Image (cartoon, rainbow, N blue to C red; front, side, top):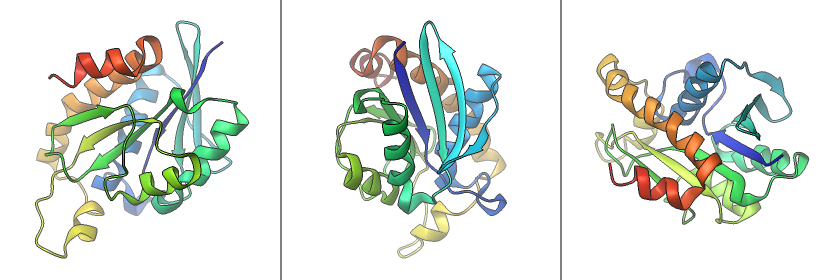
Amino acid sequence: MDKFLIVGLGNPGPEYHNTRHNAGWMVLDDFAKEQAVNFEDRRYGYIAETSLKGRKLFLLKPTTFMNLSGNAVRYWLEKENIPNERLLVVVDDLALPLGKMRLKANGSNGGHNGLGHIQQLIGQKYARLRIGIGADFQHGGQIDWVLGKFTDEEIETLAPILNTSREIIKSFCLAGVDITMNQYNKK
């Protein structure tokens, strides 16, 4: 059975709930809800397991805090013997406007500390789903912006993104990253 690791980046703790930096966790929570699976507190993160047409999916929300996300990703890839080609990391992205998303097969970390740490430990050949959070802040206000909570209006804007993210995760596991990029990056 093919195994996949789907990682949503974020920070643990109630103070980070619904913050822009936790967009990855929000996507995984939404996917887990649709799959009717619950997260368990395990080593380096919250893990939920589900299956999809003969494939086993491990959903991981690292509890290492954003800047050490690579520790959790590397551990679960090695523990479950999952190749990097079957890793999808869902992450917030300042460079994309709120309501936009982009799937990439690999690439740079784009200045994102979570992706940067993952790259340090496993390289940059893994897929990432970037969820736009916009950059509506004054110079020097980036930390307050990413750690700020989504407004009710922003949550409404994110709703269709959560729906599409679920479809992207399924397509990534069933059809692969190239077909999924061709289908969803056009929208």
